[in-house]
Amino acid sequence: MKKTKKPSEKLTTKEKGLIVGLCVVCFGAGVSVPLLMEKAQRKDTGQFEKLETIYDLMTNKWYYANEIDDVQDTLVEQAIDGMTTNEIDPHTTYMGLDQAKRFSDALSGSNVGIGVGFFRNEAGNMVVRSVYIGSAADQAGLTEGDIITKVGNLNCAQATSDEIIDTIKNHADQKLEIEYERDGKSNQTTVTPGEYDSTVICRLFDDYGEIILSSFSENSGKDFHEAIQQIEKAGLKKLVIDLRDNTGGYLDAAQTIASSLLPENSVVFQEKQKNGKIEETLVSKEYDPADFDQIVILQNGNTASASEVLIGALKDNLGDKVKTVGVNTYGKGTKQVLIPFEDGTSLKYTETEWITPNGTSINQVGFAPDVEVADQEIRSVYYSTENKDLEFGPDEVAANAQALQMYLAYLGYAVDRTDNYFSQASSEALKQFQRDHDLNVTGRSDEATWKALEDNVLLEINKNEAKDDTQRQKAIEMITQE
Image (cartoon, rainbow, N blue to C red; front, side):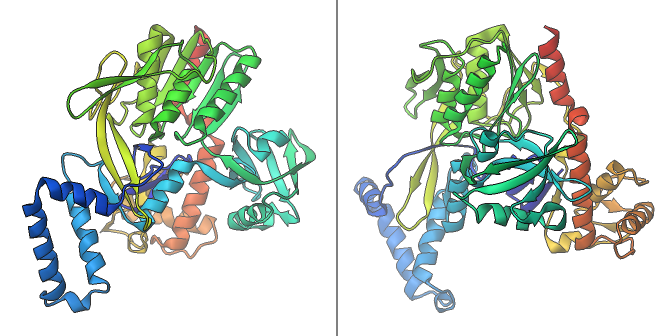
């Protein structure tokens, strides 16, 4: 189940959002505009004279110039945006202030809180669905399935999610009492909310360990290694790595993570330069690698870039020890460099093409899975959150009609179709949903109805995740049978 705020931004209920870019190596120092201009001018002064002439005409002679605030800055920004927009390379882009900040925040992986992912149950309490490694919740011993009933003086059943989150953030670096239920018994613990990396989740089972890796952030390598150590300490020799919806991040994080699993001197990836020269990147010597008997990797269409680097490194170096399950990966085989500027904007441009240790390019191709298993359809449905797309009625063609009818069907209501035409039968089903949830019974879609639908579908997806996640079930079957 997924929703869109803008055409280029998709948020997933599994808390693995699709970030703006797919793989970035970030250099510490920016390159100033005058320096870049000076180098380019020396190469072709004539072209820059044309650029300056057009800029002067648009600023001083253009009829509509006075109707644009800061016309000089606007023209420069548009020129840069045009220069960096090319069909051949969708991953080179100029990012304005807001986009650059979102991009940076997505790559950092850093959050403030206790470090849990949760959903609300029927009573309104917080059910822990994931605990991030090294977080306050991890240190306090909270585990998946715990039901948090009280946060400080706030009763969860009577509070909104925003109120709960705000209470936790307002207690950053302060002790906070948490009450929770486990196996029907009430418990209490003290946590100290603070910064944590939200990219690595570690789970231990009887026969195997599982690591869910949602991004390749600054601290993902360290946290991944800590997860590996926990799995080794438990005496487990089999590993599941979930890379679904992991769209990438820092390549050096992929190198560090591979270094926790590959022998010394192994090649993690190769880079093909603009001039055709190929350079190898080896594992780092920061960690001693673990030796697993079997590794199963979960992948999907949003598994991209640094995630694909890791898949290629493990498959090429470990051979039959590694199997992949899911559907074809995204196919992003290029590396970008991020150049931040003093005004807060950034340029992300493609510098090299990366290839696997064995010399395979997956750019625009991706990795086919060893065992193909489609994901449950309800988990990959997109809808728009734009107000205009939330309002529609029977016998209308609407952008969100397909998603709405699929959600109703998932919740057990009788719809007769699941396309973009919202039928009379589906309208009657929606009326029943509205009655069941004390909504205005109109048979029409509206914002309040969408909120109730989303809450109920999220609850069912989370409650049934163990049995509904067919890809993960196949991975577990593979790793426990051998």
